[in-house]
Image (cartoon, rainbow, N blue to C red; front, side, top):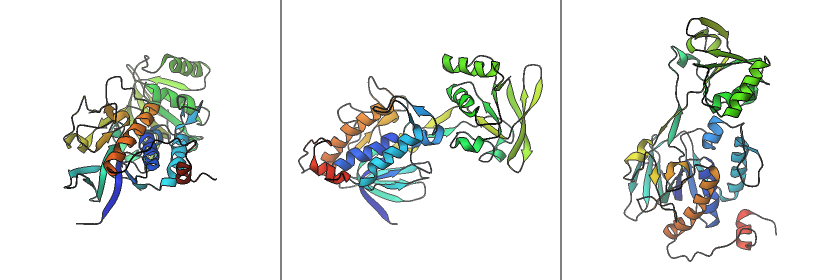
Length: 342
């Protein structure tokens, strides 16, 4: 058996909810290690819309998704969590002492007394559009998320899709790109009416181009696009394109989690609303991956779930230790943990 990383709590998913769970668990002196399939912390916030503002985080009238992730990382820094990225958890087994052994797809081994599933909708991947030869351009001139606005400055950008992401990025990239063309298969859009109206206003003003039809072909070499072909009902046109952003949605999969003996409800994990415990003792689920009556898929709801989960996890990690509820505003012991100056 190879090296084993031991921790009090193993958190699957390093999105905002998983990160905040580190804070709540750290207040109770529990060590955490996080595993994520992505190459960095932040989950969907970092992967899909890092530059987009979020408006319903308490205390922030508006905060960028990546900025929120950065603030959460700053908040949990005093607890020194461990991170393992670019890994999927593939195995979970119960140990004789009641804890768990966790295995990744690269064979790494972890042991923990508690497992917290904070994997959002599960492992997610953007849906690849059925465009011949698109794989050759992925990562260089075909992207499924906008990670840096500056990467699109002065480019001929084509955005494909009719949902909120497509229209939001059409508006956000318009001041940055040389030209933005929005391509959708039909004149009706699935996005919020306000977004549709703002997009049409940009088109009416000549600030963006709009084309209806399907992307039927790509032209370029060495992974770099020059143009795309858009086939409509009666015509096929060539559109200049150096960067292509197809927004065809996400494929959400629970992956190996579905095989861990947990009760499932429509591909989500049912939990109680006292501890956010699953049907397996010692395994908790917080954030978008869980389900209970009245569930709201909001970041702030996940924060609340993390706080209550931490109380229950402490009873498992330290069953003989009395839990004393303390406020971070007034507790000198919590201030010491957080590095707050005297």
